[in-house]
Image (cartoon, rainbow, N blue to C red; front, side):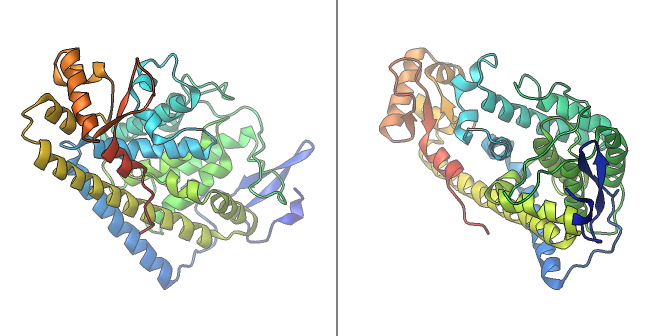
Length: 384
């Protein structure tokens, strides 16, 4: 990376470091005034509206816990897939997959860690914590627990320089700041998280996300923690009370543009296009979460009309699929407090009605998934 490859508007500089140079971003906020047109202002208002609608489903999550679980787990899965994991959302619902963390495969463990981490972060903020260096380091340690990988220092800032592969073949790898620059940069970042910005909150969150990913403070897990930080800022600033949003799905669908837009900020100072992309991600994912929630709500109402009287074990099981949509015979026996034979009979009855389907193809250790529920969870939704 040649030092003269940056424009005068770049919010940082290349600094010689041995045989290479690293990128040193300027502290937040940006030095120049950001300018937003009427289209961006309309996008911002729509994003706020969609977040308000999304927060409005909170009262339903107690009676329909699948609404909350689906959103958190979708974010967990999308985030680890963005980092190269081979996993889909059904994997994190499967009873056998979750039964023994000692044998859980790496990709699923990463997703489970993500779910635990974002839930812990949300809980701590709801209890009065602020976003601090200590909180981010605690969450990073939880995120990397029991995951085989390249992180020797969970919860600690990286002690070594790293290279990030470029999104495009014609670009040089990106080299984040040297380790000795990280504490000062991260101190500035968390201070900015807790400062009233001259810009709208969602703009501020986009600035913070760019800065976090550019600093890349940890040895591994930066992408995942950076996306968790988006949701934590939404919670800290009162837009959400729980981690209902799954922004990683948007970044996953647009992963090349996601990387390119941030790289362009670093090289040319093109903040506004990045922030438009970022706010559109918040808007579209809030709208998608609402649409999927509405579909699940309608399905539950349909089931209530058919099975809500809960006269039989099969009726009771059908309604409990909204709590646990992947089950084994043992799960059903425990859920309904019935014998194994009664559990098998209930499963067979719902299989005959195409409510459940067996997924393993085995004679023993069978698992069954809720067909209608996963049709909604897995369906692609048009961006609203």
